[in-house]
Image (cartoon, rainbow, N blue to C red):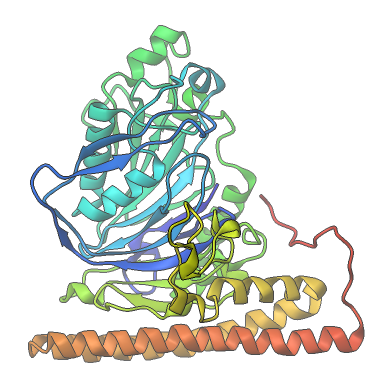
Length: 474
């Protein structure tokens, strides 16, 4: 289902907006920095879903652009007939950040969706925006044009949050195969949590309202179906699940509003809390991601704060657009990667169909950050009352110091860039980010070792098959 959170710049201590959240899929996740790339004329990309999807479809090829932008993203290996690798978003070199979040369409729309549907799926749209968009508004245009021209392969309804330093847009794509979509602008005073993504009242009588966009056929389609005649046009009630803001959304939006009313407003550690709180984050969270939406003088200073799994059991570390490498421990490993259970890392299997692992052997020889953090999560859950608070405080202490270090690094690199020392900037960012990612992983391993020792000493391990979990709102 995933989780997205946008906080407008007027509500923050840093004077810039934030976009944060996580993906909610169980398969393997890995961090990637995708370089800028040029393409030949007439090159195409494969998009859509297969016949194995819940709502089946067929893959098609659509034109690629001549150049795609550098971006950071988290990829994963499985979701319901959508070809891997998949992504729920990230950040590109122009400062456009993306979060993808489920948003269920009304049952009648799902029922009428063609069983041979074509067009980009939710992940295709997120990836294409990262590759092509120069602003949040541009992202809405890109997606709406793709839907109009090629359709959209839905799994029952979906949404995205597209954000830049000036604004954000919540865009919902509806099931049904009719090309229905709508988007709402979020500004400097906005707080918006999506899980699922929602839009409520649209002022359809204000044709040029700058805060709303929607497909040309949206209102007429609803009238034709008998779902709307007059009065307020509540998008969620008419085309969505009709539930409005879910309980978790109400809770976190309320908590963020309270934090924003303090004299110090909202800082990075508050955003980290919002993505880490066990009321919202548990085993389903595939990673954590926080994007500070600022406009640096050097695009390479754009960054995300990344945690390898849900931040309740993994620390945040900085990753920059200006770096070119990430540690092997954070790349794709075989742990939870779909299809790896029958494959080998053995040259003797080279000529046998689908028996050679898609994971690089040298990478697989390193530890998996995702596995190590998952282990810590399950250790914490053996005695949540004691281990969760201890681990959280240790993470918070590390992150407080790391935020200060990151601010200093940004200042140093900014000075060097002014002196046209781009290669040196890249080396500094590579060294700082990779070192801190590894430091965070080392901390996780140390915590796991100590917690394991305490549990074994107290004989608290149990073979009870029923798993423990946090008391989450959703």
